[in-house]
Image 1 (cartoon, rainbow, N blue to C red):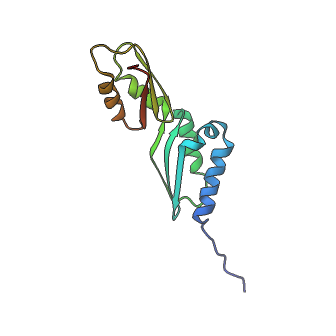
Image 2: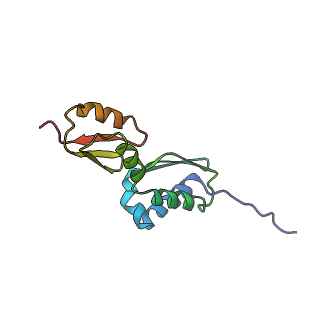
Image 3: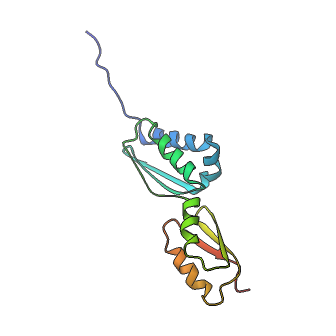
Length: 139
């Protein structure tokens, strides 16, 4: 009589460790590792934070599909700085430029005379994926 085969699901700790290993071994993700949050509960993964590019985000999410034991992935809170910068640029008055690093928008250029910088910053802060707005305007 043969023994029954038991298939076990990896526990959440193993899944979490596999995801952190993925982040630690793909060079573009290594640069973003401190800006990526991962939780695992009963095989369901929630990923949030920021990566630098849309390609890195896409690669990461595709690779998560290969991690054994994951039952679902929620990445609604994972943003890429390239897309955030494009969204921000639509709100900028002439003379202002924006750079984005892990959700922090850095404004530079010429201060718009006809629009208070606080109003611009408030509009930018309302965009998904923006964590903070920084500028050196105002002295």
